[in-house]
Length: 130
Image 1 (cartoon, rainbow, N blue to C red):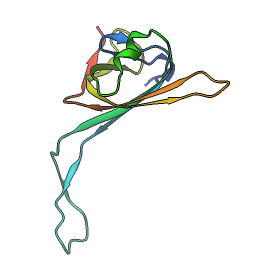
Image 2 (cartoon, rainbow, N blue to C red; image 1 turned 30 degrees about the vertical axis):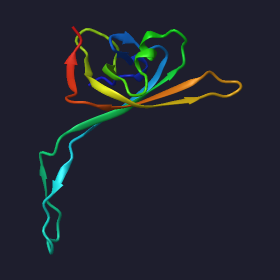
Image 3 (cartoon, rainbow, N blue to C red; image 1 turned 120 degrees about the vertical axis):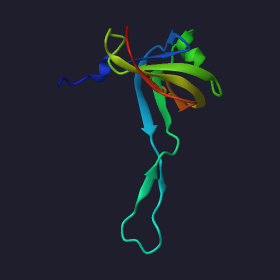
């Protein structure tokens, strides 16, 4: 099996490429319900609680970037998260998410960094780049 290097990753928001992405994080959770009774020595659980997904996108601020403009706080946006770029045959994640927060960091001698936090709204699909 070949390793995938992170430098080929990319993100689109609302069909627009997000400029100067430095990294993104994606968390997919499948919560369980505790089914343990009092007095039992080992925990048991039931699967089936609704799945959820969330994450963040870290980027350098670019003026007039259509993709970054799609990522406004409170926006509902279609995200495509490519871990190996938009290479035919590679898998990527796709789903509608709500942008829950935007962090802005800058220093006197640095470029401006943005972090966009998101929470999935509905299913997260894993698809193949055509």
